[in-house]
Amino acid sequence: MRKILILCLLFMFGVIAQAAPVKVASLHPLLSEMATHIGGDKIKVVNLFPQNGDLHGFTPTSGEISAAVGARLLLACGKGIEPYLGDLRQSLSTKTRFVELGADVPDVMVPGGNHADPHWWNSPENMKRASRTLTQALCEADPANKATYESNQKKYADEMDRMVRMGRYIMRRIPQEQRVLVTAHAAMCHFCKTFNFTPIPVHGIAKESEGDTASLAQLISTLREKKIKCIFTEVNASPKALENIARELGIESKPLVMDGIYPRMDSYEKIFLFNTGIIAAGLAPAKPKKADKAQ
Ligand SMILES: [Zn+2]
Image 1 (cartoon, rainbow, N blue to C red):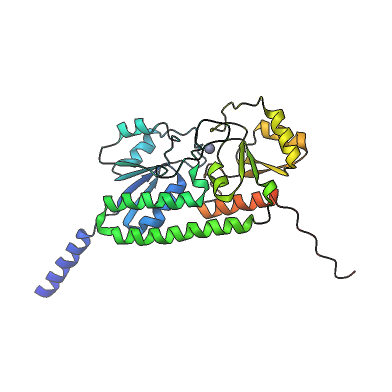
Image 2: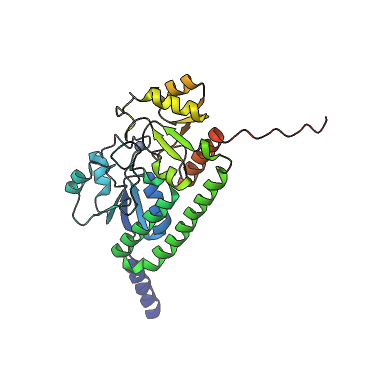
């Protein structure tokens, strides 16, 4: 009887001694996904970004701020895409460490502008870099599970290497002269750097910002000269400037997911494969039709 009692006490002590998962709050669904891959069951991820939210218009509500209370880490994209971070810091305890996962990603400048493109997640190479930053922060917050985090980060990094290879393969038939990515907002510069495209953003950083459209005629002339076959809108936005360019040139426009947020695609892999597939469909030459065997 005594032995059973001791065993029960040991079991209870074991359960109590088991560390609770580390609470991690995140300001972007792709960062939440990355954290889930690396933290596994050692962490509890709270995604603060609302479904159907607009990345450039988002500011956390009081409800979303409450959901972050008690988090050891708060994951942000960084590179200035969350202008509300300073206010959010004031609203949360100093025990919550803010980690900007884009901090270690090298800047890529927007062509013709004097600012960097903050949409670093559009290159899997950067997701790999960011996963190192995240892993280091997790190891510091929870050293007892360092080995788990580091082992999971290696797997995640291998996955991102695989994404780069897949992207290159999917877009392999696009000739160099067609490797021009015309978009509305400046969101694909990191992608372009990794996959050897030239980005031409018609507007600035945010979707609704008033870009310099005075040079539109020049752009149309360049695209006509280069015989660019397709330009790229977004799944949730079809800016007038792009519609006008497509109409003027009589070419196609196809939608991409640029802000990393699209509720119908709940993983980085789905978004990345969608984007690379659309770009290949828009810019690669049509496949020659197979000869009809009956002839
Ligand atoms: Zn954007």
